[in-house]
Length: 358
Ligand code: GLA
Image (cartoon, rainbow, N blue to C red; front, side, top):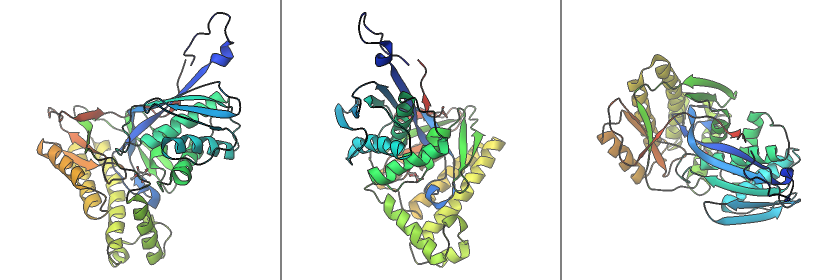
């Protein structure tokens, strides 16, 4: 926890103490655009993430340094005001933690990360979770219930950043389990770790080269379409949609609902495939998920299509876009002995967000 030694005769150990916490990025194996429809998702955390170090600083202020960007922000602890970009996350987490009744201490934050931004690997949730865990630990506040913390981080994204995202990324970052994917039921918030035994198979992400922003992409529009479909069907969530009634909706709402229903089904078929060790079936389900996201949900873009096609041509057993879409990385599954493309990054199911030991 302590990163520097106090100089002889210098300030006390307490004032030099550094608290560090880590929020991981995530890959959603399958179950895309289902979270805000009370559906099913199957994410896992990756080793890349955001580390936040906090040390004592100004009493009633937060001084934050985004080391990778070479930028900083200073704001009043008790009344953070809205801001743009990465500052919105920091101010939002500080404000929402206090709004939830956690008494925070001021301090100096140093933020570093290695999850590429705008790539569908949830650098945002990694940042929120790293910030929240670091600020709570620095302030001596016991960690709250992790589901509540996930909701709090998601409010930051909705209300401070302006992206109407669901809970998938935050739950993944807080409930991941090493060596497992986690089946999330977004209606009950039941969380079930599912062993991700790849044996000699490998999962890798490949960047499409297109960055996205949920606050500005078509993401919020898809959420509106889902609400419109619910209103037309007289239900409160697409989890309950009747496929026959949905098929009679005007386009594109019929296709949007079909994606959500078939994707929920693919999550459970993926869980079954993993439990049976049937990785070729998992590959087929990834392909089917991608086709549905492209054709029914319409969140792919030409660069993502080209990237999926490229890895399929190289022999991937399955490949699909990950995250909200409109750019970002793709996820591909490679069978034993298949070489990964030169620009692929292998991903393995890693540990959840945590306060780092000294
Ligand atoms: C983004 C959002 C999530 C989820 C996915 C799509 O990552 O942050 O809440 O909706 O898109 O599955």
